[in-house]
Length: 179
Ligand code: IMP
Ligand code: MG
Image 1 (spheres, rainbow, N blue to C red):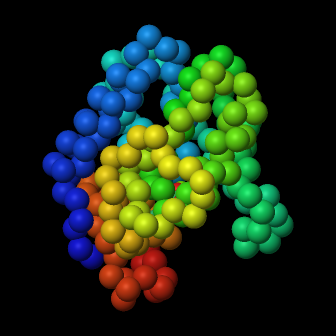
Image 2: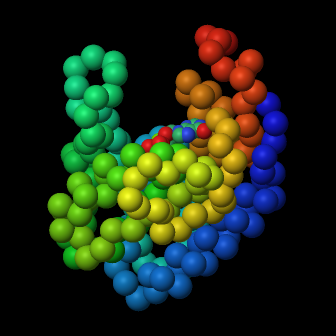
């Protein structure tokens, strides 16, 4: 495993991103919606850095199909949203923008709930991998195209608790997780 960004570098990038978000939403009713589960560490940082009135909510994106493979678009479990977002400015927060399909699927579904606006914030964007006609509005770091873990991101639900961002080597993937 190779460290790509240290805890200190992450802190600085998140502080800068929070500053941009704060400037953009000053005086507006803001709702941060985190996409479970990868966004939880970034979200916890953002809510403490933003000095604006805000609400926090979470959504779980899931595949709408019966068995294993994701065939159609991701759908959100709307029941998870505790407050409505009608008339509010929504910032959808995710850990990483890789191909972009996740946020591409989710943004219109949030839009259908009648918010004043929907924008997106991600901690990482992989360079040159975007396959959709959108880009995230707020980005912490652009990173090379590697499989990364830590700071909320997982490989088979492991490594979310690493305080830095690390790239897994090919030999570290594919094996069954140790208990
Ligand atoms: P996208 O839909 O291709 O943009 O991928 C976004 C989702 O895939 C993220 O929310 C992550 O859950 C997951 N993902 C993509 N790349 C990585 C990675 O390098 N490490 C961990 N999770 C990833
Ligand atoms: Mg995710």
